[in-house]
Length: 310
Length: 275
Ligand SMILES: Cc1ncc(C[n+]2csc(CCOP(=O)(O)OP(=O)(O)O)c2C)c(N)n1
Image (cartoon, rainbow over all chains, first blue to last red):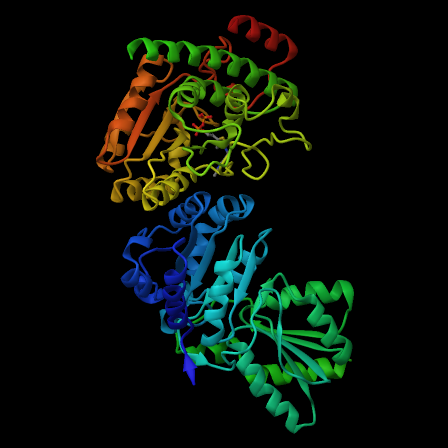
């Protein structure tokens, strides 16, 4: 089964809006794409379309937070982080305001809209900000839990939300706690740390590796910051080799976070699977993933490489 | 009523006098800061706090408070000075301006300074914040008002114009922007760097009520705030013609005093002029 994260996101907002009167939703003229349209229909008084103004929407969200509301600020991730970054830096993070920044159409999920619309740098841009929590849910089921957790979490946070349907690999009853990674496959030979859609690709890779007698442990690192270093260390103590995978550039993302941490605490062979240092292309979701090397095959190859370096 | 207003104005003038002295003491002691843009804004800030802004020094985060955002955050000594007069901060804290210890950083921090609701220092962001608080107040059926002061140079920032449209679109009659129109910025005069053209017409065409005043005439400052408060159709901007460095003869209208610190000698002269 597949669910588009944005559909789950829109539904989750409506559920939360019913429970919590303090939640307000802001959008920058992309409500039909971000699916905040659902919240708009359910709670028109608490929905604000700020128009095509990504700097202003971040500041307005921060103003709502000053007044005690819980604002969810939505726009395409590339434009929100591009045009709104200084506002996120000062008015949200430095000011330590309870603003939920929601970046939509992440990774390759805008497909044929092409390079201008493919945010492959948003984790790096948000992760570098002090006090920022950075989350990418693994599937549509987890998105709902993440949105709920974010509504209860106090402080600046960034959530990456994808546009296209991706495989559902978790169940309703699976736990979700911000900053606590979930091990979704146990193994002793190599640790694969992934987020978002790349977790399902890691599962495919693990099947392939298992056929060759290699048992991969897979960690769903839904919270990229703060990084669950305890879970990483525990797994690495067992496997001694790491592959990371994300729908994001290899610079400064999940792989960067893991490498920064492990190189200073427990150096082990690491390979980072992600977009190389380049822009995306116009193509279908699958085509772009092929071009950027976001594939199970690449995870398999990286795994055998780190194993050979142990 | 008129009598009351005159009394309030007298008190505001007294307050502004102390503010100016403390602004000079702060920038002198710190060896840095932006005295020019503090002094142009002082009279307006004094009247705002003394006569209009509903805030409580004993409870700075009182939920029913009015908001004042100093979007031109480099002028924060003017806000520290008024917060000292109003009892949010102690006068002894003058020595802490720009220091590692204490509660008076070079640019506003809402995390450590009571009476300050938003960080600033990156120009252009304050009007959006004011709009957010104003929208929240409306949702809460509260009569809270949001005031925001912008520099004239700051108006070069695109976000300000985005936010101008937002306030007009939502008819935010609880938002009052003040432009400290002192005609100077960092590199030189506004007209040298990048002219603002017909500023009044620009705001008006964006859907704002505009009031143009002499930003050092207390009667005009008072009346403009009162008028803005009474205007119910949408947001109001007070375009205040001011003099950068106002009150200290050698600082007035001198771009060099945008970012500078008075020497011991200059401080002495300035304090004499002010008393
Ligand atoms: C976004 C941003 N760019 C540049 C600066 C550096 N800067 C600080 S003050 C200033 C000039 C401000 O001029 P104006 O708004 O007219 O303020 P005033 O003259 O009232 O002091 C500049 C360029 C800044 N603080 N923020």
